[in-house]
Amino acid sequence: MLENIVGVGAVDVMVSVDSTEEVVVQRNIKDTQELTDETDKDGGKRHVTQYTRDGQIVTYESSGNEQPIITKKIKPTVRGVLVVAKGAENKTVKGLIVDAVEKGLNVPAYRISVVPRKQSQ
Image 1: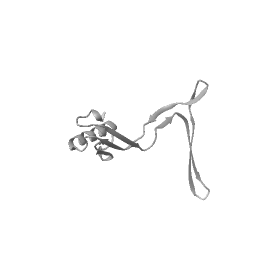
Image 2: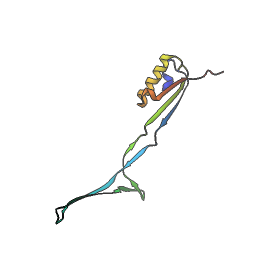
Image 3: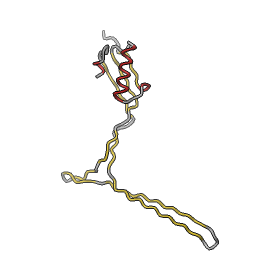
Image 4: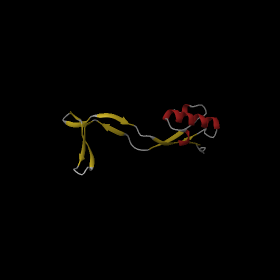
């Protein structure tokens, strides 16, 4: 897409991400809370709260295999973008590239580096 911008020639792009895709699966969760208030014969009081959480992954059978039910997939966060482009030595062209990457990948401009491509011999 960047090569279609006016003034931009050949482009190489490197995108670094924080992690891989995260998959969230459906769970049956059971929460238990137990409260105990005690007063001894000398007037001393004791308050105890016990909280327990237990869970199990919900699965379904598909072709004889148990598969977890996936509720959502979280895409990785982009850490930074490096763009090497012919024409990036021009400030206007460089600004257009930064703007396109910023909006296209939802990455702040300070995480985008645009550098000119060396001339081929």
